Length: 124
Image 1 (cartoon, rainbow, N blue to C red):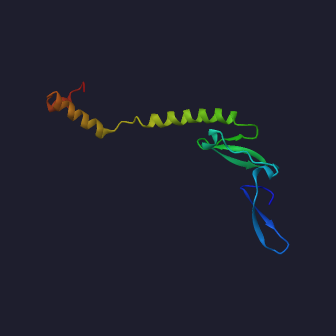
Image 2: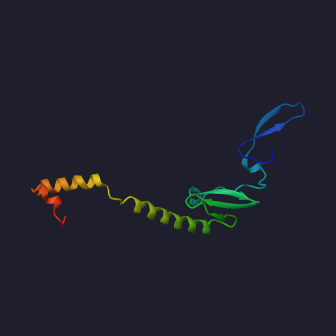
Image 3: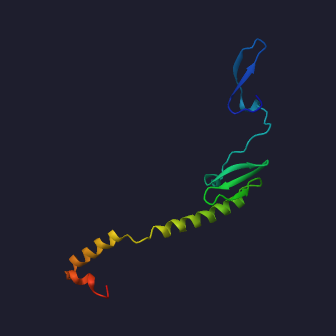
């Protein structure tokens, strides 16, 4: 095996038997290690390999950004996209619901002992 993911290594012997041997992390050669995704931006983006270049695709706007030189530009984009997404979500939640309006008018008429014709007034 060329990469060491865990603490066990398969060792092939001449007799064809494969044995599992425990290896201490310090005895494993460092070689090329993959960096862990530690930035919060990876909660909102996915990695995409395009022609050998590592790119990040935004989950909100699906824009492709270069992900080879760190995550600072990705972080700025995610924060902007999150703000835009939250504004769009909040503006759609303020739609008028006619059933709620009817029940509030009925409660107002009962509470203030208004005549039922109140809803027919031009000022209302």
